Image (cartoon, rainbow, N blue to C red):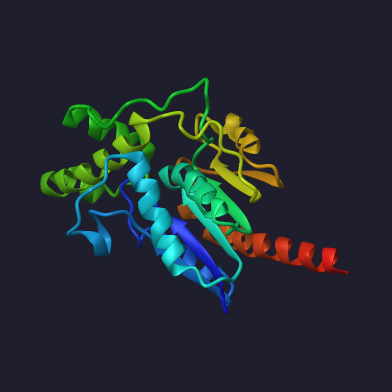
Length: 240
C-alpha cells in the first residue's frame, strides 16, 4: 500500500489548493487533499463556522480514507492550526502520523491572539485579506467573485478566531516540521511549535510572504519525502 499524505487547506482554500505540490512528491505517496464544506466538491454543503465542528469534519474524512500505511498530515495557515487538533484525535485512536508538517502559522500562542477579521465591514475585510497575498487580483477586483469568495473566507476566519486557546494544552506524539515565510511578521515565533510535540522538531524559514509555499513547491516536496524517509531510517535503525 502507498504511504499517504493528507493536505488541509488554508482559509478560503479547497481540495485543489495544493495541486502545485502533487508532482513534487515521490510516486509511492498517495496525494489526498481534504476540504471543508461549502467549497470545491462540497460546494452544496453549508459552510462551517465552529472550530470543533471543522476539526471533527477533517478528522472523520481522514479516518475514512486511512489504509493503515505510514502517513503525514500537512496544513498551511488555518490548515496548520486545525491539523494539530486533528492529529491529536487520530493519536487518541492510536493512529500516529509520521509527521505533522505545518506552514504559514506560528502555532497557538497564549500571549498572542489572532486578530478578529471575520466580522469586519466589506472594505476593511478586503483590505485585510489583500495584505495576506495569495488572492488573485481577478477575485479582488470583481464584485461578484469577491462576494462569493468572502463568504468562504469569513466562515473560515470565524472558525479560527472565535475559540482561540483550545489547542494550548495539546502535546502530540508525532514529530513536527514547521515552515514560515521570511516576510511573515510572526516568523520569529516559529519555534513556538516545539512545545506541541514530545518528539522531534524541525523548523525552516523560506523567502516570501504568507503564501511563500507557492514559490517553493520543489523544496516543500523534498521536505515531505524527507520526513517519510526519516521515520523509515529510524525504524530500520531501531529494528537492527
